[in-house]
Image (cartoon, rainbow over all chains, first blue to last red; front, side):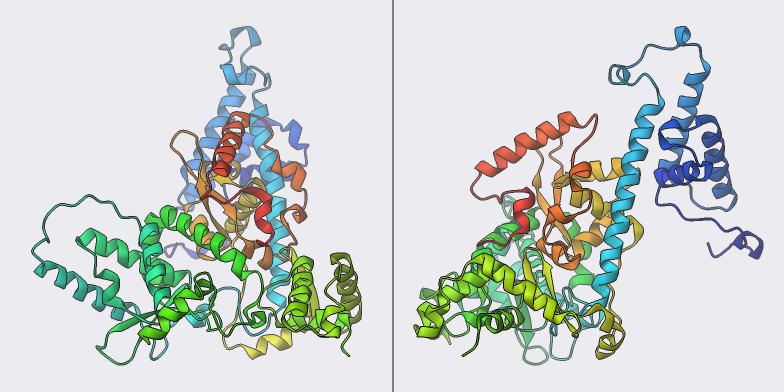
Amino acid sequence: MSELTPNELRVQLPTFEGPLDLLLYLVKQEEVDIYNIPIERVTQQYLKYIELMQQLDLEVAGEFLVVAATLVYIKSRTLIPKSDQAPLLEDEEEMQDPRWELIRQLVEYKKFKEAAAHLDKRLDYRDKIFLKGHYQWTDTAALTPRKGSVGALELMDALNRVLSKLKQQPDAGKFFDEKFTVGEKMDFIRKLVTFQDETPFSQLFAEAASRYEVVVTFLAILELLKQCEISVHQEGEFSEIMVRPRDPSAPVRQEEEGNSDAAFAEQQASAAAARQQARLEEGEEADIPDELEPEEEVSESESAESPASDEEKDETV
Amino acid sequence: MMNLKGIVEAIIFASSKPLSERQIVNILKKAAKATPLPETEALQETKESEIVEIVQQLQTELAERGLHLQEVGGGYRFTTHPDTANWVRQLFDEPRSFKLSASALETLAVIAYRQPTTRAEMESVRGVAVDGVLDTLLERGMVRSAGRAETPGRPVLYETTPDFLEIFGLGGLDELPNIDELRRVLVKVTEEKQAQEESNESRQTTPTDRPTGSEDSTPAE
């Protein structure tokens, strides 16, 4: 894009979300009924547009070419006398008109595009209203690490310490079944963390026998941080990082989000399953705001286990 | 003595999330148990329909005020009035926007109307890959994975979250425009739909899984 000459820049190309978007635009320009598309004219213009994209050195996505091929195929079919046409494929039988499938797709896409426009309006509205003192999700300000909080580097240091301890163990280097998932580890950490006020970071790895398990545990910590179920704190430089169940009234902090996105993508499925489960369990408690609970401050995750866990807590404090 | 209207107003105001009529009724009952006084006990038999009426009254009274009582995600919450945005915005250092790109909105629309749905269906409706935008939606907490379909390849299913309803100010999924028309899978996908329904059934019988579909939009009672 940076190499565009001023001459090329003068061409005003509307941007399209995909081939269907472009097709819809062309149909609209022709001012014809969507159910009665003049395939020949539309195909011509469609191909012209793709040519233009190529001239402008815009990358023509494969999807645009697929639709171009479909259009040409439909056009070619209409040129051949019916008797000479190849027998229709099984799934084409009910649609005598080869345009049908494309039209169906177009009509459907058009509806969703309209629905998207409607959702967009609702976001406009959402941008104009404010809730009491907090946002629905982390804004950019909250993504910047704050003083006294634990950032990605500190977490990495802590992880390295755990990994180096692992090397000293005689067991390290042996093979183990890869039997841990991020979801299971998240459950494990949830239990461990709600058991006491503060859990040292290294304690979460106490049982880890393999590098794999350490990594999975670490991913689980990141995921829980992202879900705002736990928070991490560090008293001073080089001191142990402490993990706490997140105080529901504290502001949302998600410093680690940016660094761990790639890892999350892979683990999304298993982690999400665990998250759902957790939400389901919390759902019953989350029903009524905390302020209304007669007991003193009990966070949502803890209240599931109270009063037994409260007693345990008192001992450890 | 405070009347019911004032109490309902206070409860909704103090809550950190939207409250439904039923939750408000439950709170009134709970209050009578926790502090048994004539005034709390007088309200413990309040009906949900009465709450609805009171909320409507409050909404009318607030019409010309800076606060707004919004119905969202099956509950009520206080927000600032949209017409005050230009001023209220100045409270915050960072500009805030909920806006999504056109491709993210289209993808979100497919998920919202067709949930639970697969990546393949989103791509077939839109005619383009959805990888990047789907990640954005997941990150923003507007959609989440809803298990896997029992179709070949066991693709991940996606659905919208309760946050989605809150952000878009929807009382429930049935408030999406044209929901009946768009929800139905027209031609061709019938096989897939059957498979999906079967998988829904099997998933509902598993105790560890959440039920799917529009029930999700109502908070657990």
